[in-house]
Amino acid sequence: MSSIAAKRSVGAVLWEYLTTVDHKKIAHLYLFGGGFFFLLGGIEALLIRIQLLKPQFGFLSEETFNEMFTMHGTTMIFLAAMPLLFALMNAIVPLQIGARDVAFPFLNALGFWLFFFGGIFLNLAWVFGDAPDAGWTSYASLSLFSEGHGIDYYTLGIQISGFGTLISGINFLATIINMRAPGMTFMRMPMFTWTTFIASSLILFAFPPLTASVFYLMFDRLLGTNFFDVTAGGNTIIWEHFFWIFGHPEVYILVLPAFGIFSEIIPTFSRKRLFGYSSMVFATILIGFLGFMVWAHHMFTTGLGNVANAIFAVATMAIAVPTGIKIFNWLLTMWGGKIKITVPMLYALGFIPSFVMGGVTGVMQGIAPLDYQLHDTYFIVAHFHYVIIGGVVFALLGGAHFYWPKMFGKMLSEKLGYITFVLFFIGFHLTFFIQHFLGLWGMPRRVATYLPGQGLDLGNMISSIGAFLMGIAVIILLVNIVISTVKKQKVSNDPWEDGRTMEWALESPPVYYNFKQTPFVRGIDTYWIEKMEGNKGLTPAKPLDDIHMPNNTIMPFIISLGLFIAAFGMMYNPLNQVGDGKPWAIPVLIIGLCITFGTMLIRSIKDDLGYHIPKKDLTDDEHKGGVAS
Image (tube, rainbow, N blue to C red):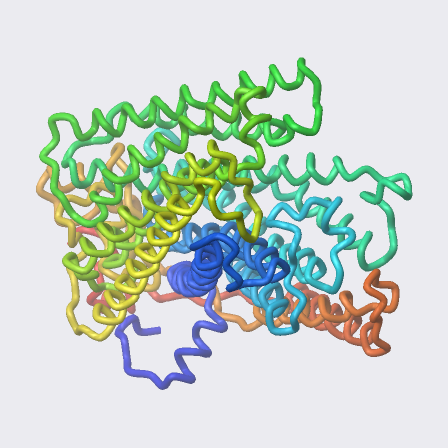
């Protein structure tokens, strides 16, 4: 197979992406899939802010408003933030550890298609008029009695996409444990790989409780069981425990990779090694552990009792210690460095104060008596968005500008990037800073409107104006992407000129086998070490030899499509609580499951040994694959 790009038809490109198992192309799929849902969730947020622009505004009905904020939260958490992080993980982690792909390329493709079909299924709820309306947490006391099929779209869509997330998390764990290049000990791994490793560990332990609870909810609604129905002997609080055993680690599943992105950006543009590498590693591990153990602080108001409240309050506040270590290490990395202001660095600089504000209000939530007062107010909305947008979205935007040349071989415009940052940064603080005060002034969250003359009018108007500024910033980013795509400019392997880790030794974008020869890792910041010694590439660990690569396959797409079809049969089965069972539902359910399990059976019994790139072809190939000539 030649690595030389040739002009191909649209159909050929489409087929290649439908069948690809290459981690770099799957990164593209995650980027565009997650980006699509990010835009969808953003539009939903703008519609919410239009409704709240002035008191008693009738832009949305109360019913539609409930559906809108439910879908906004669900889409942004499950279908936008996580897939966009998976895009960067897929694009960069195998390159950072010197691997040719992830451990299980087939499962990597399956993980994406499950996420995508789950997301499409969930959003078809809008098309068929039954969007979920019980909030992104879908508390059982509300969701069990929600009319129509909105909650069924939620349970089935989340279940399908959740399988994809779990598969991807396990895949990254196996990749990082087993496929590091010779010399790359755990204490030489780049921080983005470390944070991916810890986030994937959290996925492994946090998603099974969510999967189990969503199954229970699905059985209650579609098969007439009574896990959560109090009137029939069930317990609705169990849902809350299960959900937050997943939901609180989910915040760290999102934030830790964001920390990893900034831990790559800040040293690069400070032209210094990351300060306190070892302490950063152990702080990451400790945040992951504590983040998993404090789910119950979301349930102070359910009446856990003083002892439980005290334990979870102390544990919650303890997370501030390792987080503070990270903040000070980033600041000390910049201290005395030759700081270069670029768009990614601007996002890093904007992230530190923004995330600290979200963290401080998080510590406030850890105080149980205060949480009782603030729990259902806009203060919580402000805190949550300061963490997720001030932390995760800033990292996604900074990381996208940082890694775009490595992923696509082209630079995004710096000028448009500056404009995007300024508008987004101002818009973000306009939108959410005032919401702290709206909460303190008594505005409850999840309400479709408010009365005039309560001191809430101006604050809500400012918040809505800020949201529109963020929307304009995203439009400019899209224009930037289109302009960059149209340009024929190509960039070098190290376009920022100060790359420190192995991905910057590779061409932009990397050749399909990544490394012609497996590299040898001689310390933290491998590529920086080679550059300082005057080498033009990485030191190879092994002689040039044949390379084994996996074949492309359409099977992951078909397996996911089968579950997508089966979900319709499950939703309209004759036992469903809505009472609109259809005679075609059971056959459709069986057909969908047959497609899925039949394809899995074929995959199991059919040998697919991949292919080899002969040594001679590699010798003739002009691509260096990161290895010094």
